[in-house]
Length: 209
Image (spheres, rainbow, N blue to C red):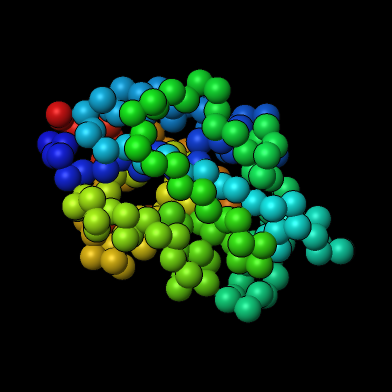
């Protein structure tokens, strides 16, 4: 697959709390950094995203007495998984992993800062209607195709991919540059959604500059 000037590499949430030892560490999560570094030079456009929660965020189990992480509750926008506190604004856990080095990134998009709405996708909050502004940015810059890498494959990467398709954008996930949580079969569930939506999944060796 040839990378074009209208492609954008979206490196999703490569933060300390999502890497081994973090509050919501994804197994082998820091292993995405090597593949991302190898392919980033092929892109004229690179964007980083960053989970950025207030400490009182509604998705944190600690903010719901009697609830534990990974239980679910109903919020005004539907079912919400409760998570350990993670990526709290201004903490080390919210910082990008120190090994990540992408000085060419033209934008850092922060998401999840609305205290009453969680945010997996880089395009919309979990109510599926509140935009992050990324779609408008891409449109104004003339960027046409999204290539996704980062954490986690079956949550923030997956929801971003599906929203990109909903917006009419071609989207490719670079599988070896992602790692998954796989909570209650979430990988299989999302991969079935990818097939229906037309999300393409490749490995980084398939990319050419």
